[in-house]
Length: 109
Image (cartoon, rainbow, N blue to C red; front, side, top):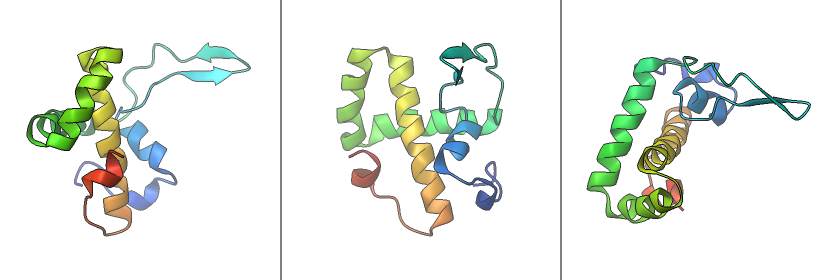
């Protein structure tokens, strides 16, 4: 919450996830990929917090732990953790915007 700041500055949930470096950096323009080398966009501390939260979520929550090996089997462990971090970042956006409690079944449906 402290790293995100005022949640009203983000128009959409994807903008918040992008600020936390939880989404890909590819930009398409007329079918051509642009901006591949721009890996430093976003908040470094927020990105670290999202990844740490994802590691603890996979370790401590059986529902999230059940989904993580399937993702890791399709790609690799780093992408699996990044996927969990992205889902948690989206959940944090909605928790901060609309004061609601975290529901693991809504975030990892």
